[in-house]
Image 1: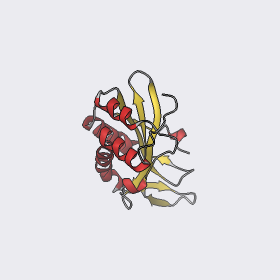
Image 2: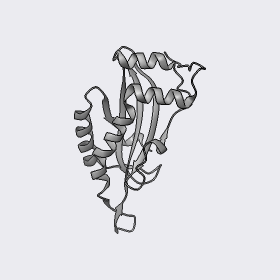
Image 3: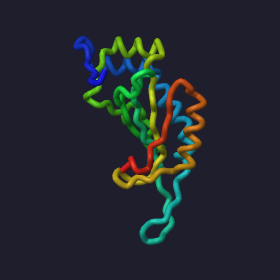
Image 4: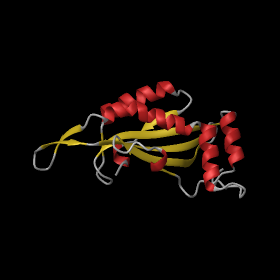
Length: 163
């Protein structure tokens, strides 16, 4: 399954809905949002280049990958971000164009528990290209969401991978 292909009978939107339903992905992402909102509510204190104290808005960035229990990583399914001011998961969710697997095989894989999700996320501050992790908040959210979904693998971004 190195390159995944889509059966032509499904539109991209139908394919995405089927995958979200079979994997419970949307519910998991909404629970991740609920778990992380209390950390997003408190601004991150930092010192800017002029040695002034500033309060920075936090956001959560995430990617959702598809894994096979035997073969490991298969593909990136989706990714996105949200913040306290923009909590819309679905509106900020992006799907790569090259993930186009037969939906029936993926649904069957989730039902048989052969396939599973790996969600990598991090609570960050800053702009793209200059993101900084908020490690304590990320660790707390990781601990809480992991206990809610033991069948899903959760991980955090390596700070060096963010920029």
